[in-house]
Image: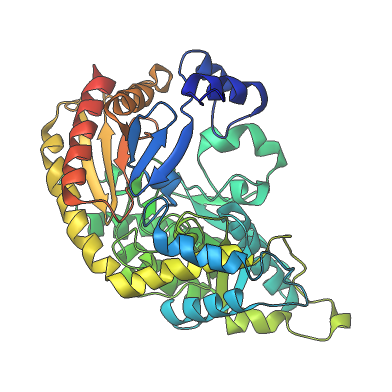
Length: 452
């Protein structure tokens, strides 16, 4: 007779061989690992029968629920046809159709799709492509990048270099290229009585100055449009993007939009850049691209950039960057099914209703003595906890208040994984209004647990 799997036995096996991401493994001497047996809709189920509402979309990737039947069917059908072929010298229907659909829904002028397999890799592609573009057009001195303080673009070395979250970056600083860092338009830091729009306008002065001083040496500015997600879900006004696009044009500098976390409906529009009415020179997409099913990323750029690489082989202008699983057919099939759901189900409209419900369900937390701000952009809602609201005093990071909130939520049957002292909700789009209310209640309890 087979022994049934249980959480404890699976966790013990795991700790003997697996090194988990973004984790101090010693924590698991005290905090039990949670093995997941299956998922269904917004729920994850462990081996002991406990379920957890996936309040953060499994690190922001799962848009339409676990085991979504339409995405399942698309991947299953593709699996019977073609599982993988290299994209150098070959092509296939899923990658072609996906590229056509992306070009159709992205801001006009973004026409060329270059695939990789995760968000960090997409940022690496965009950074290299911008740098290489300037080499190809005879301006080799344009080799630096401007980034925002508190930004995050991934953890491979190039992506890490153009980010600014010290926790991830500091130890690797000797390995990283030098970048120009400009103060973020983060609206949490605005003065009392100052609107998001006005604060974002004021903060643009630093970017304007950096571009004026360094434009001759700068290849591109890279930003996360509207929300600095890994940077504690800090947010800013679309006006900043409008000003940035105009300034990049005026100074002859590329604009890279890292929409890996905020793309595909998360910000309230299909792409966050739409809210500023701009078109970047490069847009990086991943996470929700496949509905959370398979690793896939894409950098979409302009015909102008593409043509700078298009020449006889002997001119050595080709973009020689590759990944073995570039444009994988199974991942592309999942992405096509994901886009079909957007087209068929009026997802953006429903998300706006859900976002209003999230705001209403958490509104009372704005008056909590340990909550400095409840902020929201579309389907991203963040609760900033502080030691003392009146004085603005913050918790020491070593107290690990966010971990208390995480453990409280798990005990209630919800997955909420705070970033430092910020508790946030970023649920799958298939969540029901009543489930939002319940999750908000868990978040309220998590705030109390964290601040006790």
